Length: 114
Length: 114
DNA sequence: ACGTAAGTTCAAGACTTTCGAACTATTGAA
DNA sequence: TTCAATAGTTCGAAAGTCTTGAACTTACGT
Image (tube, rainbow over all chains, first blue to last red):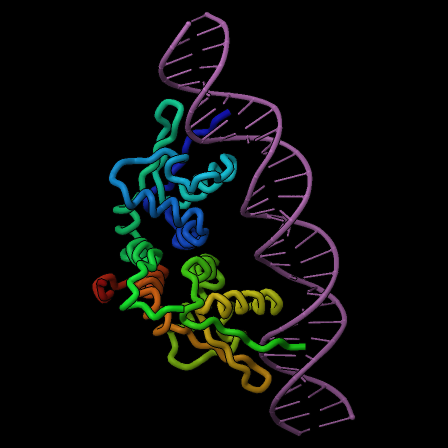
């Protein structure tokens, strides 16, 4: 039995849930892939390869319920988009800064190496 | 037996750990109190009242190990400061945006935009 | 030395996460 | 329409994390 895909409204977004959702490396990677491309991705395409499907489903539920992504059933798949603008409106700068920080672009002359 | 208070270096900071630490309402509140005042606070003063001490200790450990706070023993207490500048250096804008978003300030025009 | 105050450690129960197995729903082909 | 394949969901169990009371440590003041 598939439940409807529920999305919180702008009002219902909680900063803590968003941070929690982004605190997991797998979920952060999913979000990065969604922000990267312009077109919506299905779950398997947005998730890292070889992630068990049950785990994948769990991660997407957390992202959706935190309000980070919008998921729509399209036939047999679920296509996902980042709720970028809404989150930016509610929590200005947060998602942007996190996404910027999440890519430690290895620029050997600007970064001190480890 | 009390273990030494270990702090990650700048290099060792992980974005995920920082987000995870801030994703808990109690810990976010602690961080807010630390950023609010200029002087370091001991654990009991920084934590919400009536929080069991074992829970408090656990939360401070998570904050410290994520690199968000610096804790120093001062006699019988542990005084804590936010590692604001360091985190800003490593993950620009992240902590600032989260703190700004965490308090829906009554005067929205006083917020500096990034 | 004693009592007090501030934190820490430990252990147990509650809760969460992960993942295989079984399941559902939609599509496309025969 | 029936069948197989595909994309996700649900369930259940094992492993892990969180919360908290109780017992402990450490430092301070008297």
